[in-house]
Image (tube, rainbow, N blue to C red; front, side, top):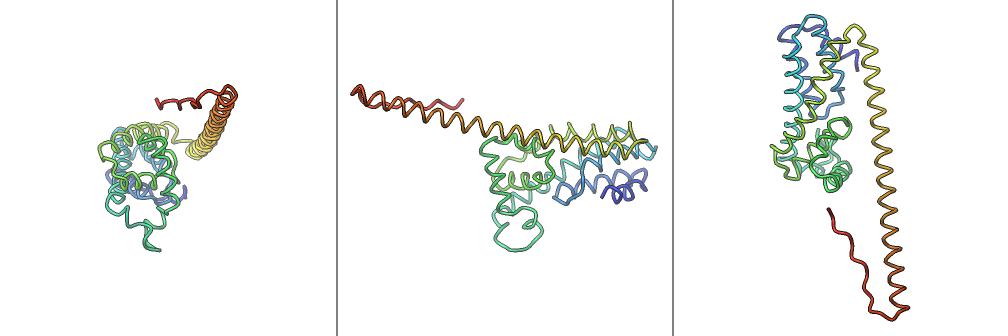
Length: 231
């Protein structure tokens, strides 16, 4: 895939360089399996090669991400209730009912901030943004969170491609290793949070049972401890 993108992007220059990078980011936003970070790095490589300018390429990367993400958000707003009713179709293959159910649970648990996290999870990003539209999230809120995440990725990847364009293969390999490490860390954090939550639930149940036994022994009215208020 990297070689395909390199042949596609590397042969362009000037206005076409920006248009090609912008177009790739648009289809990435729609859920096609193209590596967004590699596309941004290749945009920086064009700057390194003198075929484009740094600041315009950064702006191109940012706009490509935001517009591509907003497109699938809009599709979610208009088609969200219909996806899953038909056995075939482009979005039916990307946004399966199982994936949507998991993402909706993430929304309930973490709120709208999940938009920023999904920016760095290619397999989940399109489903998350589609679901954000389908559950009625306001676009300005979506754009705010998505912009924060995009500003933390687009300029950085373009700059890395510009700065280390002479070591492109090593840079892309390092980025992939870093992504794997981030994913592993996120899985571990999620597992620890789950275990802590289970321990707290069992501990609370144990305290309630002990309080109930003590009140029964003393003959006092049964009053269970109040559940802690959500912060």
